[in-house]
Each structure stands twice: as structure tokens, then as C-alpha cells.
Length: 325
Image (cartoon, rainbow, N blue to C red; front, side, top):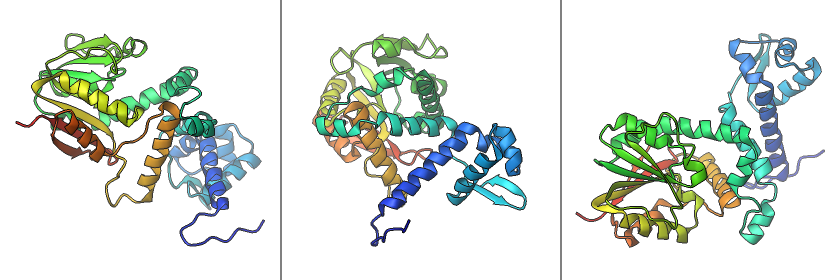
């Protein structure tokens, strides 16, 4: 089959197909345990086939494509890993999301309404939900030191949409001065982590878009919440959250910024675009620009804002906003 000509900067469809083939082959390698088997050192194709329970012919064909796409090397010493994929949880989560959750994305784009919401879809797949849980818990640990150091002094914290309490648990470990209320839907809040310190963490069930958020909070956390909502919902939530603050309180946002930092290259823009479309498909939401978030916070009276980059996750930032002093 001849390769189509390609004008400068415009990907030919065949390259997209090749990329999809490489990605699918990598997923096969993850599922079969290829990369785990090679952690102990080089193996012949036959040895690798035995380790993964495959046939030598099929394993050789898989090795060939993984070599072509740069995941493996195959030389006189045997087969070795050249570029290890991400964690199995992350790779398999994104594979199932892209190829199953996106299955009817054309309908969602036309109608603006997902046929099944992301969390409904996820509940039907407990193994996949477990992968996402481990990913989120790991991300909270990776970011915890930077977050704890950046947050203003606080005694009372409201963690809106705090889910299982991953960020709350890590914050309590690093900030013994805080008491946190985790506010989320009943089906989520009942699964608050068992290691959450019950003398400092309170679970409150409710809908944060409509129910009372209380008052007098020193900090309101909106961590990985806003990307599930459209702009009008974010603006309304800011108004309601601002009213729940103490006079010197702040709202703190953790999320992806639709405008990635300069110098990260096209992969960063590609990931954000993929994440944005995934959010549209799953929630009708999307990735927001931090400049827009700061403007909406200003509408709620929180005009003093600053952005804190996070070394462990360059595409995410903290946005801390309060009232003028």
C-alpha cells in the first residue's frame, strides 16, 4: 500500500492509523505483562513468550511492532525495554476511556448531552473505577507537599467535591492545625477513606451546586472539580462558595490550565485537548483557562488572586483567591 503524500505540518491519515496501532500494541504489552517480564533483564523471544503465556510466533510479532514504535529493543542480547509506558492503572484507564467511553462521542457532540454520564459508566466497571481511585490517591500524594506549603494559614477548611478525601487526608498529615469538612454527593461521601482522622475530618453529604455550604470557612478547596462543569456553573459555584468564607478566607483551585506553560511542547497541548474532549463526553464539562477562572472569582468579590505552579505536575496549578485586604 503506498503511503500518501503529506504536506508540511499536516498529518496524513495513515500516520494516525499507525499511531493508533502502536498505542494498541503497547496496551497489549501491558495486559500481557511484557514490560513487567523484562524488568529482570533481557529475554529471548522464546523466553518472553513463556513468561507471558504466549506463542513464540505471536510474541515475536508483538515485539516487532513494539520495537518499531520505540517501546522495546531487540538485539543480540535479547529483548529489552527501551521506553517504559506509564503505570498499568493509567494506561488501561485511558485506553478504556478513549475506546469505550468515547464510543458514542459523535452523538454527544451533536446533542451536548452524554448518553451515560462518566460516573454511571464507571460504576458499571469496578476494575476500572479501582484504577482511577489508585491514580487519584497517588496524584494527591505527589502534590501534597507543594499544596500544603502554598495554602494560607487556616483552621477550618471546606473541601467541596472532595470525594474519598485523598487531598484532605494528605493535608491533615502535613497541617496539624486544620479541620476539614469534605462535602460531596451521598454515594461518594459514604466511601470516605478509612485513614481520614475522624477527630479532624467531617463528612457532609449534599449537592454543592444547590445545598447550603455553611459559613465562616478559612479555606474552600475546589480540587479537580471545576473541569466537570460548564462556565455558568463555575461562576454560580464561585458566588456560593465566596459567601461561605470568613471575611479573610480564600478559595483555592487545583486543576489543569487550558493554556499550558511555554516550553512543554505539543504533547502538553495534545493531552489537554484529549482531556477536554473526555470531560465533554463524560460530564459536558471541559478544561478552563485560569485567566477565566480568576475573572469569575473576581465577579464573586475575590479580586486578589495568585497562581502557584506545581513542580510534580506542570499542567496543573493552584489558584488562590481572596478579598482585598
